[in-house]
Every structure is written in structure tokens, then in C-alpha cells.
Amino acid sequence: MREIIKKLFKQLIEFFITVSGFIIAKMRTPQQRYWAALLWVKWLLPFAVFVDRWVFRRPQKLLLSKTALLKFILSAITRYAYIEIPLRSLNEQALLEYHRKYGGFILCSAHFGLTMAVFGFLEKHGLSVTSISNGGSRKKAYGWNWGCTEPLRLINSDAKSLIKVRKALAKDEIVLVYCDHAPDDNFQNDFLFLSPNIFEYAYKATIPLLFLGAALAYDEIIEIEFVEASHPIPASAEELVVVMEEFRCFVAQRMEKSISFKKKSSVLV
Image (cartoon, rainbow, N blue to C red; front, side):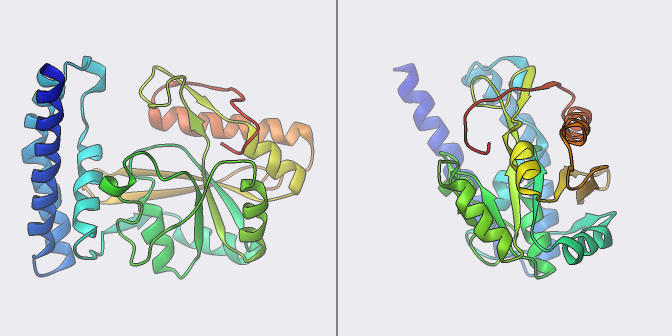
């Protein structure tokens, strides 16, 4: 009986969020919609934390964050009206120069929460991007295209993904790869593991790499970060080790978790 009540309550919350997204989408300007979404998240957060802790009985460390709720409401809004989400990158020109220099390259990231904001950022600059992902079990609810005017191109993480990645790179597209995974696949553990597969593949195929981070900044603007490795195209096994360590530190500093590399499967992620 309790499980039925929890399921119904969860569906009610999702319906409420979707309706809220529809109402916000009807506001006049994109800026009004974005700031309304932020205010809505601030008001909802205490209630969501209460529900997460006392109704669903989840441990303290798994409480919802403002970033997670903002991502949810932005997805709901996008299903009804495209909004121009305010984004900022401190090294925007470095990214554009990187693309001019290498053409297609691999964008290495982890599940930072607002990583998907990069799709709208790249679209604004006319850069094509493909992501290696199955879309997630809740892709209809959360959406893979908030902040974008076009649906995203996804490459499933399977035995054929390498072939599809090569085709995308040959067309000067950027390929986004989430390199992290956790033992139970929910990315909520104290210990997060990074997959070495994409780095080994880039080394053997001489493909340039660029690190990607994303976060909600102090002024509540989504900030996107691009960091170049000391060896964008590792020329030796030693340089590959250096790049992998740089990425491990890059993720650990932004997720405040104990990070290590661990091979999970033969596919990219």
C-alpha cells in the first residue's frame, strides 16, 4: 500500500512541475522565463527536500539540490516553448579556436548536473554536437534538448558506437562523452569511477580531447567551462597517463568525491 501511495504522490509531483513549466513558458520574454524558473526552484526546494527525506525515506546525503530541480523545470519549459537560457563561458574564444584548429574533437565530461547546457551554447555558435548516451530511463520527462531548438543526436553506448563516433568526427562534429560511472549507476556514491576507454580510444585514433565542466554560478547564471589538456592529442602512453590524471583531478575538484579510473566494459563509457 505504501509503495502505491509513493508512486501516486510521485506522479502528482511530476504533473505539478509540468504544469508549472507550462505556465512559466507563457511568460513574455526568455529572460523572464529563466528567472521565474529560478525563483520557482528556490520556493519549491524546501518542500522537495522534505518529500525526498520523509516521504521517500532517502538518506540525508541524497537530498535534492537546486541544480537538479532547475534542470527539471527547464526541461518542462522547453517542451512548451523554447527559452534562451542565459549562459556564460570564461574561455569561449578558446573553444572556437580549438574547433577551428582540430575540426571534430571529443568533449570529455562527467555528470555535473548542468552539463546539458553546453548543447544550447554550441548550437548558438553553429557547432554540431553529438552525445554518447542512451538518453536515460526518464528522457521523456527530463528531456535531452532543454535550451536547444533542435533535438539532440545521440549515439548509443554499444559495440557500434566507435564507428558512429568516427563518422561524426569526420564531419567536424563535436562528440560529448560522459566518462563517469558509479557501482550502482546512480552517480550518488561516495566513490565515483571514471572510464579509461575514451582516453585509450582517443590515443590510439589520434583524436583531440577537451574537458567540459558546468555549474550554476554565484549570480545564478549557468557557467560552462572548457579546459585543454596539456597534451590534447596524446602522442605516447606516458602522455596518455598525464591526460587521464588531469581529467581525474578536473572531475574530483568539481564533484568533491573520491575519484579513480576503473574499466567497466569494452564500449566507450
